[in-house]
Image (cartoon, rainbow, N blue to C red; front, top):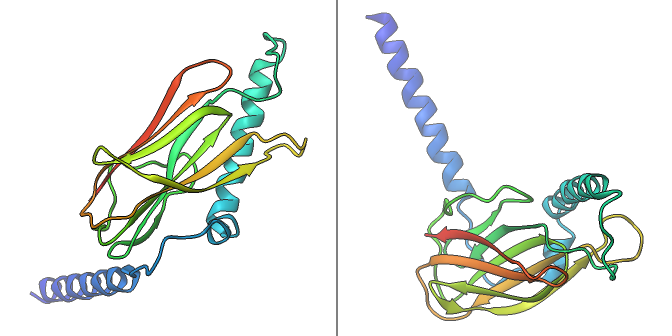
Length: 187
């Protein structure tokens, strides 16, 4: 009986701690994140570091292969870096960690989705529930220090009342015309 009461007490304490932790993490967001807030964040620097490792691996794999007549690398990766909204706050996923849906319930007067890609594109766009989003900023990234842009971060904002839907970020590679997409279900 003592063991049962002890177990019940432990479960109650553990559950109350989880509820308190979740409540502290539920922060609202007044406006979309600007480029400086993203680029200067620890999470973004970690994403760039991971992208650099993958980029170097791709370069090593392609050594001795065909040479393109442009310094621009083809698109070889895209993912949803983060989702931000007034009611859902910030969800930052980083590099190569693209869940199927957001954890928080997003919505409000705007929703921002940020994509991270390696390579150059000829065109890029974002949609939320089939509606076109505005590309409010982009950040060029030099992954290997050669002063040639290797990657991009793009911010997409839907500025109208919304309760979410599926976000799709799409890019068309400039050197080899292929379509790349990243998506997430925004709750």
